[in-house]
Image (tube, rainbow, N blue to C red):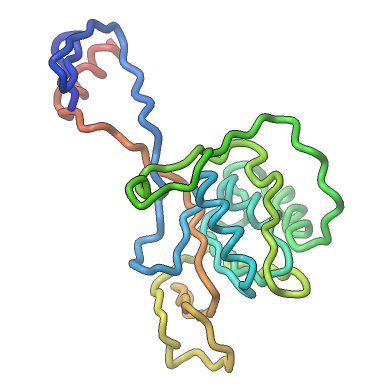
Length: 230
């Protein structure tokens, strides 16, 4: 625990340091959809990306939540699987492109892929598989080219993308809803706020992250921030 004292900071060991400005770089945690289910994967770091690859091997359909950079890249990178893409916006990648560009990207989302060019940027990964003790410690952030050398391939013969615009998950169930008329059996069923029901093998939550703010007394932190802005 850190306590801020008049341009000085004292750590839990009692050591005091002077400062002029403070930059908090404490990382972030995945912002998962608010449902308690083992069939939800949060795509946040390199470890979760490897877990996703393993789960895709025997999967036929996934539901992807999110409309940011990671979600959009994921939709493009997935192969040989049915995808239900659930977004709250009117068009895809709305934070980055306009409607016209979004329509072009939609045509590319389920197109056949040519051989990718080799990634030029450096990639960083963890050197070990997290143990049970370290299960709460996140791995390296995804960063650019996070999907390089990752075969995100499902168990279908080809890829198909269904986009549900301006909607969100209203309910998640591991039992088949009564209003689902399909004959297929799935691990989890997603009910959207528009009434549609989709069965899938699992849900991928690519809805961004939340800052991991350390345990600092808020009133002191806010006071220092106000003073620094003056």
